[in-house]
Image (cartoon, one colour):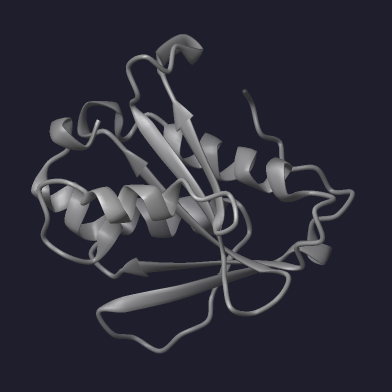
Length: 147
């Protein structure tokens, strides 16, 4: 999937211009002690990955960080929003009290995705924008996520 993403898409996801992930970065994303990586394929077929959702542990106990990468050809179809909603379902009942995300200000799609799940901007203007969603504010409300 990363090979099919533009350098721009990779740069706004990883905050650096890169054409591919290093083995150590990929290993870190797949380390269950550091979080959960979910792969998405068309029709559920993960032999052709079109999106990756990372729910990563932070240094703050009970707080996770969300990051989503959708292959360029699948962007602007609502997939990122559906994956963010699904990530909320995944963390329900897991002792998570807040979800955070940092996005580049140029990444309007990610900012809309985060607002769509109820996250609010919590940083000053700059090249990066931080969002936060307190999980207690959505308990029992349902996420409306579709699979």
